[in-house]
Image (cartoon, rainbow, N blue to C red; front, side, top):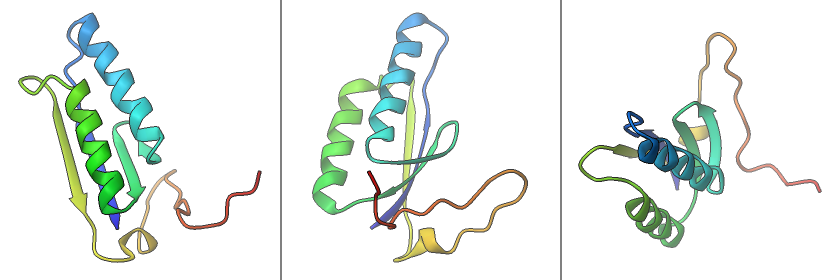
Length: 96
């Protein structure tokens, strides 16, 4: 499934800044960062549940906001960009 994940972590104190870094690092392990707080993620239900559980362990539910949008099938293949944004491929082979 294709997902769009956004987050807004309250960084008015040092603990918030740590949570922000932890959320960003976690999301980097699941998808591609397309803006500062926006990730495109291709995953399955099991990994989504793991991601949600891990985010829930990091954030302060009273101060932070996470939004996850489930896109239509193949939704990440139909992205338009303006400005310096570039479309990134999620399903190409990984070359090491």
